[in-house]
Length: 337
Image (cartoon, rainbow, N blue to C red; front, side, top):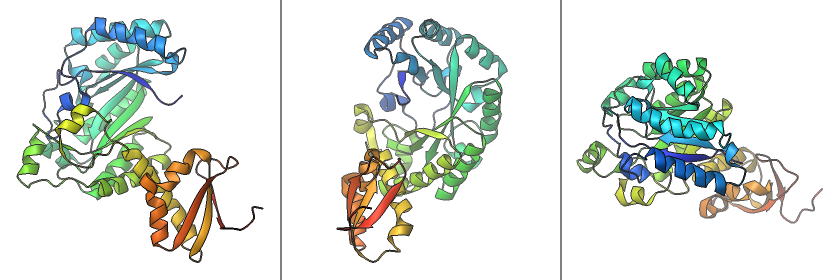
């Protein structure tokens, strides 16, 4: 079973900042805090519908500032979740919060209430970029919080953004490398989107900010995936989850409902290029693991069309004897060994 969450969103409550890009209501489709009763009802339903797999899923509280909401509210939400953890119905509790809202006292409370994973909305290692986008914290805050979280025995997750105002591709690559050095267990990568009713929307409409295109963002994020794979860090999310409210409020930026698939296809194209370009132009059969046929073909067969434009007619076939990541190339009409 892949990484799974039964997620609850606690939007904007307790956060003293309004980041340039932020509109949690349209990102999540939620505008109010769920009540303990609603959480209990949802978890009961999820445990029943997952049919014995719920113990592999986490209960998650997202919204980006969970440890900054009023303490009594935070504990009321966690108390309900802990009840289901004590029943061993779910694997743990995951929260997302700000780097500047973590200290030893907070971590002690979170541990007492069954929290197992903490994600930090770190976004960038460049303090000038963080300041320009009204983040209200520094990279040093991220370093300190990450160290405390790992020392306390929690699973650490980090979130970064690409294409933020004031940031360059080199800044984003450096952010990935410096975040990887903090040894998180998981990463989320979000290309910056321009949403209605945000400061970023004002900058965009005034011509002060030009967002990445899907092509630019996917090319960059493919490189970031390479970096995190090198450090054996699991990227559990790439691009915002498709929500009707998000699409309705999107003004500009590299949004695509299959964004990760595009990035993975680009990685495969890059991987095969050194071998393919050493071969004479012509027709070839490319064998891959069955689970990677779609990734190899590319979104709407973009890789196949790219190779054809270079003079290589590629037929992709699944081979159950190959592991994911492996491939074989042979001339078309050549008998298999």
